[in-house]
Image (tube, rainbow, N blue to C red; front, side, top):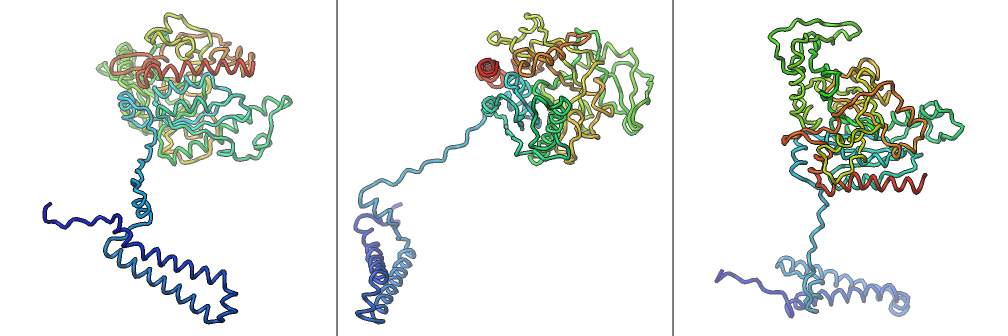
Amino acid sequence: MMGEHEPVSNTGEGIWHHNYTIIVSLSLLVISCGSCCCFRNYYRVRTGRVGYFIVYVLAAISLVFQYLLLSKLIAQDKFISYDDVWRETLKLSPPAVVAPTPPQQPLESSHDNQQLQFPPWSACLLIKDNNIILPEWLAYHYTVLPLRRLIVAVDPTSKTDPRYILDQYKSIGMNVTVWTDDDYWADGAKDHEQRNFRITNETLPAYAQDRLVYRQKIFYHGCLKQLKTENRTWTAVIDADEYIAFNYLDESSSEGVPSWCYTKHIFDGQLDERRQCKETCSSFNFTCDTKNRDKHQFYCKIPDCANKYQRKSFRTMLNQSATAAEHIHKHFDRQFDMNDCIVLARYLFSSRGSNKKAIEKDVDESFNTTLFHTLRYRLRTELDNAQPGKSIIDVSRYDRRTITSPHRLHSQCLSEGNAYVDNFMMSFRVHHYVGSWESFRLRGYELFMQRNYQPRWVVDNTTPQYTAKEGTRTWLSQFAMLVGSEMAMNLTERIRVREEREVEQNFI
């Protein structure tokens, strides 16, 4: 504004006017101190104590002079740094202020924001030579759970390194940490529980298996404790060839509705009506079975009169949730509210491929569906022929107790009292894929054939399914919508082809 005092520009002669005395005094101080140090013998011989006294006085005068001058300039807000003097003298422009580089943000989309309305899942994964199947496992659970936090332990005897694959998934927002034995190992009492124990060709298979189980237990214990400190919630504790799937009604199967839908539970004497599907019969005559059940938990079955209606309502209820996190959040199945650890039934899928037309349904034609186990293989064991189950656990309620089994993590995990569980109990189940020979060959032909030998297989078309507000599609199509088609291709099919080529070149 006019009339206001204009600030005086401290440039040119003004700068030297305020700073020349500082330069002079500093020179005097340097000369005095230098003389004292370098020529002390000369002063002592020629002038004795008087010489030292003169030097000290000059130095003291210089310091006092500088102090008074600087105090005055600071009080007048006219102090100018030597950098400013030098810059002005050479007519240099002030240095440019470089803004710090912001950290790279993970890829986001409106679909991902919609997914993360509910707390995302975590997982603890111990792997050994699983690079070929790892990309599909990551993409599938990124979409269906959704998985956003992962701790991976690599078996030290693994021939392949998964870090390249894991790094690619960091770019879409997955928080991944890779652990070595240094991060979690704790020696046990037995020989095979010692870190320096080595498996050789002479090691008995039982010892090798015991070593693996011990590794799993101590890794899961350390992983769950770490995730608890991070305030995570539901966590999957499964292998790289296992997938958590909705326990959908497969209408093409003769097995009928998973019976948790048409089963009412009584907990502590109270009928839990929220846990069942919508009923359509006007009245029910319950028959309760308490045999071989915990005294606080038994099951009351509904008559068949409601069955055909419940088949429809069961599908409707599960279809209201796009992800496992959303299903839990809506409290359809109160098992998740009442238990912090749950064992899921696990079923083996054969490596016999399904009809090409069926596996290509609802999948972008740019993808080669034969490279995806969850799309290609649809023959599984019967529901009454489950494998030992696998656990999911809410680490926010985990009390850090010791892990006793890789199947049923601890004694309080909800199950039938062991590692097995009836399929009807849960909203989810675990699908275990033998997979293709290309992905299995590092583990051996004998085990491959053993896994594929089952007395009877049934068709299961539920695994690829993903339910969205826009309708039902495959999980792969949904993954492509989340991250983009090109990125989805890079993160799944192209990485798998790359890993297959490396295995062929380096190990076969």
